[in-house]
Image 1 (tube, one colour):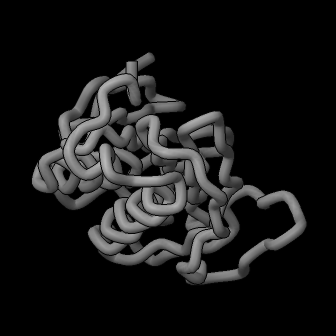
Image 2 (cartoon, one colour; image 1 turned 180 degrees about the vertical axis):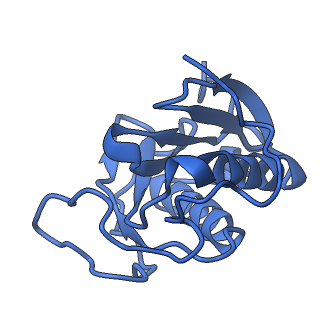
Image 3 (cartoon, rainbow, N blue to C red; image 1 turned 30 degrees about the horizontal axis):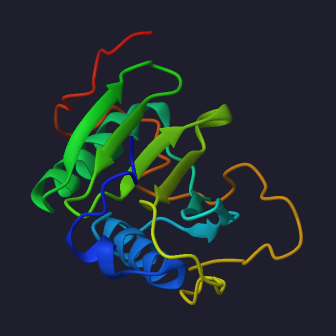
Length: 174
């Protein structure tokens, strides 16, 4: 189970260190998305010795571009040394599950109305207080209110036209 074996870097971390590492993983993942998407922080949750950081994509990812988006993330995670641990190819709510060499789980899942969610769950680390993420969202912060459905249009990601290049995710079904 994730967190039972403290691996390398995670063995020396407390929860704040792990939260910062999770934020770095999310920052790098969002940095690999081209063209950029708008995102907002989701809720941070914590257990006795672990925590989860979340980000929600506010850009509309059209059904026609979803495969490109998923493929881009999967390729980036593999290139970053993450092991892809599971893939849900469901046409309406696909997901990719991966694990970093340090034992952090990172997940992309597509939810209701195609909204894309990312989360990083830490392995079990030394208990400590955890500060809010320091990275500023590249759009509204939505502090103190529920996040809306995706509401930002992108000339590329929101396009209804077929993707220009074939995607390994194309043609998947539920």
